[in-house]
Amino acid sequence: MDNPADHTIVHIMTHDQDILIVGGGLNGPALALALAKSGFRVGVIDALPIDTRKDPDFDGRAYALALASQRLLKAIGIWQSVAELAQPMLEIKVTDGRAGEGASPWMLHFDHAEIEEGPMGYMLEDRHLRRAFLDALETDAHITQYPQETVVAQHTDAHGVRVTLASGKTLTAKLLVGCDGRASGTAERAGIRRTGWGYGQTGIVCAVEHEKPHNGIAHQFFMPNGPLAILPLKGNRCSIVWSETDARAAACMKMTDDEFLNVLKPAFGSFLGEIKLAGARFAYPLNLTLANSFIGQRIALVGDAAHGMHPIAGQGLNAGLRDIAALAEVLGEAKQHGEDYGNAIVLGRYQQWRRFDTASLAVATDTFNKLFSNDNPLLRAVRGIGMGLINAAPALRRNFIREAAGLTGDLPKLMRG
Image (cartoon, rainbow, N blue to C red):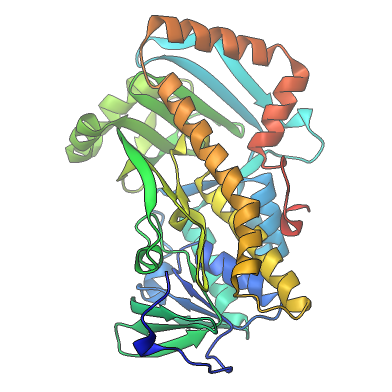
């Protein structure tokens, strides 16, 4: 992945920034704040204007943050400004069935009271989280933002990286981090290939208002075409993530709000009373995509740029935040020990820490989706028996609860609370 020598970044020992981050969505700002805590000078490059990213209007998008992710947000100074806006997830109920027929008698029930640490996680609206990140970036002297800018070229050598922006401006640093999504330009320009496949499913995301209180309970209802997640927000509102076949999802997105509600209601059920849409509807294709390497010469990939997976377990953003906590720890320790934090040895520690875990999670979500997104009678029986056995075994159930809370495995320091 070396670049041609005609544009060598030379051996300039002073750089515009220590680390450049491409992507100002959620992972980019989170990483910038985590790195700033270790004294790194960080630049964040994003295509959108800051005002657009700070849009205060509710659009229906929200995130399920595992407890470990909440700890990271607290450690980097974000949680304090969004805590009152977050809805704790106190219980998770997982059922299997068909739309309009009600749930199977078999059910998984996870209750936060079975672990000591607190709620398994929190639901937080996209608009609140983005604004908190941007406010924090603006007040941190270690961080420089480059809004309304896109990277058109990047060159690396043994001493650093230089990126060229669409405006013609060039920036240099010791390390470039791609937080630029599943179609990562950072990875592509570095020659990092990807492995993956589509599911023939599309995720429909929206929010609903409902009559009855949700009591902080999240629901995952598995149907033949894909799962429906009903996730509690503040007040009598829930976020919906509905996985459907591509064709049916495309038809749903063309419907009026009333038509869409008539299709949603049989799957949603009546347990929360009457429902109505709150905010817009979004749709995105569901696929699995893994970068063949999380690192290149002077380059690291984080979040969806490194791994994109099915939302069936709600772990997409949480896996990205775990990358961030691990990378910030690896780079911070290297800096403290006087190492060149952008070299292959240091970056290899990050890859070794995160690649196996994320690959395992991707395989697990892929298998889970294939097991549940079908109407095979034999598999339905196996699913029901399996859920019943897990639900009847307290120790096994607690392990699943801790997994959902992000408390298992080799936790980075920023996620240990």
